[in-house]
Amino acid sequence: MKKVVVALLVLSFLAGCSVGNRQGLLAAGYSTQYVDGYMDGYSAGCHIAGHPFYRFTRNIPRYEQDRQYMKGWNDGYTIARCDYAAVW
Image (tube, one colour):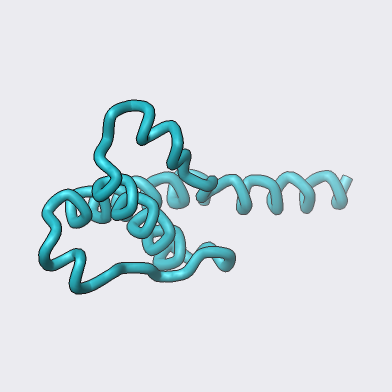
């Protein structure tokens, strides 16, 4: 029984920040700049929330100069933090 509980906890931990679907976002019509920012923001949000397999990623010059990248980064960051918090 303990093994089952531990396995479920590990799976829920790993699923808390699933890999974003880059191709799906592009197919949905989001710009490449937005998707790049979203993916970086999602990684950063998971990292800040405590997920050990993600790192904080933000291209600062691009974030300051590219509104689409900034919007995508902010959206990805917010969603990742909420996704991961929902698991825990």
